[in-house]
Figure 1 (spheres, rainbow, N blue to C red):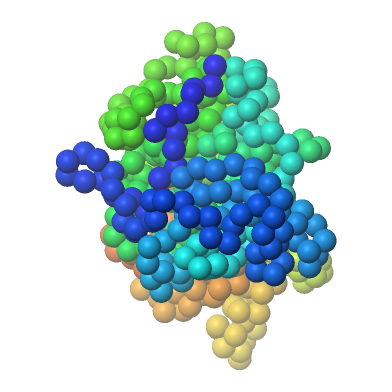
Figure 2: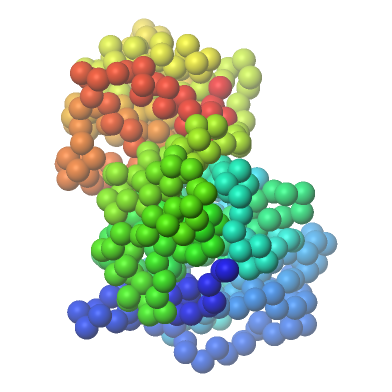
Amino acid sequence: MAPDANAADTTLLFCRSTAEGSIEPLIDLVVEDEPGDFILGALVADRYRLLRQLGRGAMGQVFLARDHRLDRDVAMKVAPPLLDRRPELEALLHREARLGASLDHPGIAVVYDFRFSGNRSFTVFELVEGENLRAVLRRRGTLPLAEVADLIGELASTLDYAHAHGVVHRDLKPENISLAAGGQLKILDLGLAMSARYALPGEGYFGTPAYSAPEQAIGRITNGRADQYALAVIAYEMLTGQRPFVASDQMEMLDLHANHDPPLLRELAPGIPDFAERGVLRALSKAPEERFATCREFAVELAGSSPPPEQPRLPATDQEQRIGFFIGHASQDSLLARQLAAALERHGMRCWFYGRDATPGATLFSQARKSMDRSQAFLALVSRAALASPDFSRELAYAVSRNRPILPVLVDLSREEFESAAPDTVRLLGASPTLELRLSGSLQEVADRLAQGAASLGVT
């Protein structure tokens, strides 16, 4: 059966671990929960009437509210009060609200509004009616593999979309996954979702210990593979009826995720196929680079190589002018860009790159900018030459400013070398899943994996 609530199931935010083995806040929150403007029946911001409380926890309270301006019901999440409204924290909260509002995907609850009232911030979301995954697990205990594979496939497509836009959820768990009316899965609670491009400096802990990736558990900067780890914990729980680690103490739970191996799934549920166990355990790898490149790849392995549902959600462009991939590269990598474009176009994906498609006489960046405006995604060939190229850096920054999904390919460059040599570029790429290409290896294999990732984004 699903576990009972305890400290390890509680969301923690703006925290750090201490040398004494405890967790303390980085930012002061008011201990006593003063209601302020947020009482039932109150009209907040001259617009939202609070009708009833839907829930409460470490992340604050959630209310059903009526938006009188647009005449619709909404969900309002009210954050815990702050003792000190520091400008940098306010700027962070505003930025993350705008980030959430920029994600246009049917699997993500829409963010409508964000404001402060006194020393409390509140976010207004789309009201998602239906039960959450935790309620399903409490009622049913375990789910059959086919159903789990469908659910994980749908969630994987949603998460890959967010990661391609530089967003990491950081607090994925059954309580934050809703089965809405009509069967649509919705990922809720973007309160901890953070732009990996603009994270707070220094180390800190954000999340729920029971679902935290090892790197998250020790306070390191996370990318999309941390969400993949949490997705694997959820898959483990749906298949076996229990999580891979059980502890009531928060620090003990974080230590288990960081330093201990989980029991094999078939020790708990002998009927689980080998391929499904193998997929879950790989996604639960301690080292992020040992997990799958994307959540979709994990879902495919879990399903026994049957692709999960696709969720095409990309910037709208004129059909005749549309470009699938803008390929950003250094001039030294023009031949590789040409070969990769040819391989992707065999998959039916139209590509643009300067070495083949530029018009003589026009500046590089003006053409790149116009082509990127027509593109659906940015394919970045990250080589040593590219990291030294100001043109490549400008193209990448422009892709970020245009909110284009980014699919980076490391060319004869390890992830460790990349992170060490180019921390600013790593921040720009954010949560985007990376692929590694060895020039002595198979270009077609990388193209096939890119095509698979692009299909989940709807690139054509």
